[in-house]
Every structure is written in structure tokens, then in C-alpha cells.
Image (cartoon, rainbow, N blue to C red; front, side, top):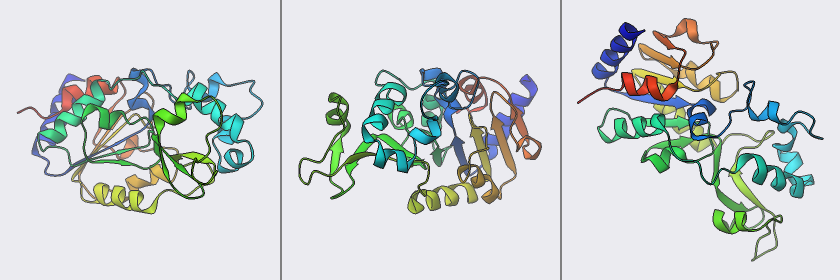
Length: 245
């Protein structure tokens, strides 16, 4: 294990273009549950009237906005969550000019809170809200301060989070920027993702570099294609393999 960590660090040190692509596992150490693990959000909600995928769908939001917002406030809003070692290590790598971009499936904004500047949020963010009718932006403080479904003060339209719900397409501008970041990387680090959710997992198909590093608690479908695979704590592994000055 130690030898592999050292070799991965050496590869990163010699790389010219590094991109990081992360999933829910990046934020679990911050107290935000992932979705599909044994202790994840989906398994926490067994017995609910609706499946989590249903409650996080576009159709459910439109037809059941009250239930949607109740679920959001109870299960997806973590106002006290703070960045962990993984977030801070990536932000430091960027600050030192060793990381070009972070691509994240997460909607928690912790990468930016840690200091990362180039962050492609392919599933959006729960820190942004807007009116579905007039597209007026609404501050998250105003939305979370009320316990009712928010409506636009200007036109009365339903206010929604700026996230990609089931049944919706990814933002093409964000996705294209993510594709470009993966394609131009000579080293791609993937962390905290099961790599089974598409189209996000399909980003790996655009990688043309020679160093793929996978960090995840459980095996992924891409393990056999990677030069380095670490099944451990992502914060600890990133801290160990991050290039040193």
C-alpha cells in the first residue's frame, strides 16, 4: 500500500494536467450521507411512501412541491457540514498549480467552501435557487428560513433548487466543460464515486491520458482500467498522494 501511494504521488508530481472527478463519497466524512451504500440515504428511507428517486424527480417536484421541499429540508440540507481533508487537499493542489479542475457530482458546495475555484458541478447546487417562471434568483437563506414551499415574490412562480433532478438533462455547458477537463488531463483522479450513475460516469470514456487513479471504498467497474486503485478513506489517500512542494 505504501509503495503504491508513493508511486501514485510520483506520477502526479510529473503530470502536467490533473483533473479530479468526485462523487458522494468525497463528502461522507463531512457528515453528508451518500446515496447507495448500506448506510446511505436511499437505505435510510426504506418504508417511505415514495422512493428517493421518485422524490428527487422533475415530475414529483412539479406535482408534489410540498412533499419535495419537506424531503429536501429533512434529508438533503446540511447547513453545519464543513469541508474535510479531501476538499482541502484538492483546493491546495489547485492553489499550487497542480490541479486544473474539480468535477463533482455533489450538490453541497463544499469544494468551493474549501477554496477550490474551478469546480464543475454537473448535478448543480443546493446553494442556488431560482423561479421556474421568471428565473429570478433566490438566496438560499430565504428559502431555508421558511418551512413552506417557496414562490416567487415577483411573479408567483414556483421556486426550485438549481439541481439536476431525475428526468432532467445535465446542463450542456457544465457537462461540456467537464468533458474538456477530462479530455485534456494526462492524469485523472476519481474519488468517492461508484461510477455506475450515467451520464456522469461516462465522463471516463473521454479520458485520453496515461494515469487513472481510483479512490473508493468499494470496487468500481473501472478498477481494471486504472493504473492505481485505492480502497480506503479518500481524504487520507489524497493527502498521501498529493504532490509535495
